[in-house]
Length: 314
Image (tube, rainbow, N blue to C red; front, side, top):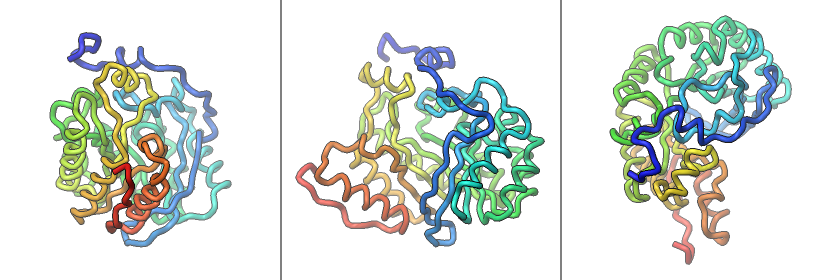
């Protein structure tokens, strides 16, 4: 390993590489959006996402940049329901909602447990409610919240990678067994799950990163998840920028994302989505980019392969 890098990426090293946080309001989410998504039933329907403002996640993962829109202190009781109400008043009607909070929904330091009833009351009109959580918080709190919902609950869990050596280096404080056990707990309680898989990993070549993204999709489905979202690794959080400067991290290419998504779709084991946010950062060709982005979006919506875009760049 490069002499400028530690043997283990701990909290202090990661925090020391950070910049400053954005200013947030405890009573407003830091964002919301509406986008179409293929549902579990096969329909393409609009899904809302509310990006909740709350206390920073206690896990300081190497690749995470979600801390930028968090507070250093827990939000007051009632703030999270107020954020949800604020967003829903501005959103067009949708049947499905994601409550993403830059950490774990079931972390009491982020979402006060006493707010569950008010949160559930705001969600009565939805068919599906999707939240995110680290495996550490997947326990009776999930069942408690699920009991309050009229909607179907889905829990998104960050697997990131099934690579046995790289996963510990991400400072996620989760083992592959932890992931398996968390998904099994949800499955036994008839709660659907989805997994986030990283495309591109530090200390691996692009070819190795692509192969391990595919293996991670396999592992996620074998563990019992219903849906996998492939997220290209990005710089911008301090740690990843430093690793890139040291030659220990290569950002994924658009072709890598295409290859991994095609692989996941071919498995027909469950839904597989490519995260298309800031996709232009992974392209080197302006001629074919728009067409390739449309193709990826079409695959996300139809869950069927589309003919590859032919260009002189590939």
